[in-house]
Image (cartoon, one colour):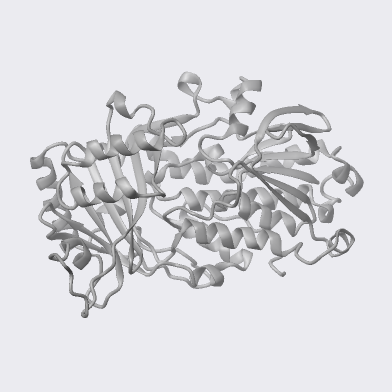
Length: 483
């Protein structure tokens, strides 16, 4: 089949890697001028780790993981109030990636590293092969088009005509929207249908904001060394951001007015900064990527966090100079259906679970695996006996096979997504528990200390518990992970 994928992020690169092995011709659009192999720290859990094993990429990615030993909570004076160690996964063949729920896991990795490995995997199959050789070997073709996005979609029984931002038009058998929580493909899809199958919920918007806004950036902050003689007293943060054996840890600080600062080290000389604000203020209404000028975003965050205490003043100075700063509006996506005809959504475009669940990357990778598996089962040239005929599938006339594949994709994945989003759909949010007052912060720190002493991970309750096979079983598909 001739397949168009919108977005070149983690989900679509994973999907491209899987689909290429099935013999399809893929075109991947990315509005950025190059692969966005950037971003901060993310993690994988349970089924997401299992997918990487099945793709043959687990060992490659394990070498790139961040050895974060755990998360500490500090108060305004910088004193540690709680310590929560990393979740140790039982990485056996039977039970990959399952373990006690925690805010940090053994599978912490920089977003850019994961995106790059999946991108390279998608390209490696076709590397060095001519078209005829790829077809003989049953391998597909991959073409990335940067600085390009979808402007319009027109579907009929035999295919989808796509208008690009470059002015070109092209026809595809299947269009897959994996372009994030602010998906353009989803917007176009919803504009063309108002059926119950694609019900976008109250207010007509599938994106459900949680009233939380995040500012994210990195800054240079070297760890002190024995031979370092600082010109000024060393920051408490520099001393705290490593354990006694110099392993990396994360630090959480909660302030008044429902503000939180989360710092993580991915390198000895650099710190990731996450600023979270739970606010109903109109000033934050447009604080999301692409809706405000970066200078305005910085000014808003600096004004909001300047008096937050602890290391906030120093972090605000770093924010002012940061070149990689960006903002996000935290929320989740809920749709009654993820497809219509030959157009289907995957990852955050279809079911973003929000950072609250700690399952966004896992949901995207697992969704890519299930969608690719069902396409392979019903639409791959290798599975012509289960679809229609190979000739029909290749020519784009296999409409029934495509619709069966996307229907089965949703049927099999929906229970997993419903489980992840359950607490969100019931109206609860961990962010609503952030304290407003100094007294509330003090109570929180006491609770954290008790939880730490009892070895109960207070922050583990913020992310979705991984119950493995008790809640949902990852389907089995034939995956060719050979180069």
